[in-house]
Image 1 (spheres, one colour):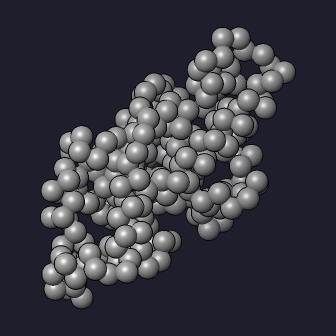
Image 2: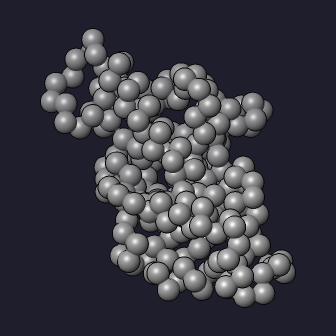
Length: 229
């Protein structure tokens, strides 16, 4: 671990970056290198802030993929699980992130590519029921519109948590934090193929993902999430 420019916890907390970074972490956001000075601040103050957050029942986690998040070990900060639909979208984005073609395009993918991959993984009817569990009837005429709207909502939530950047109506930028969705297959040779099999069977959890929110319930702090599927 590199030497910190902060000699004390008080100095780290007094830094101008602390209030914003602290709020981001408590809301469940994953802070990566793309976040610029917020990431640099965390990397610098990490050793001091780890003990600070333990007092709140959280671990400040740094992943080798290049991002930080808070992992709650208790209920003091509260947890918010991702819904089944949000988990499904996140898992599919992780598959796209692992695709070599995505790397060739600088992490950019078309929203249509996401929609196509989702339909191909689980089928149109199951996709609609996962994204809109309260719908009792499957109506092909409105299915495509329903899926597009619900995926848009899921993307907004995942963007708030630092998993993806929504650039415009057509394009997304995938962020390294999506690898939290691939935790169950970490260490396997072909992670993409292994993750795809799990997603198709509806068996993937967000592992130790989070910062207060978790996949599977609903409220504030990040994914430590476990899907409700």
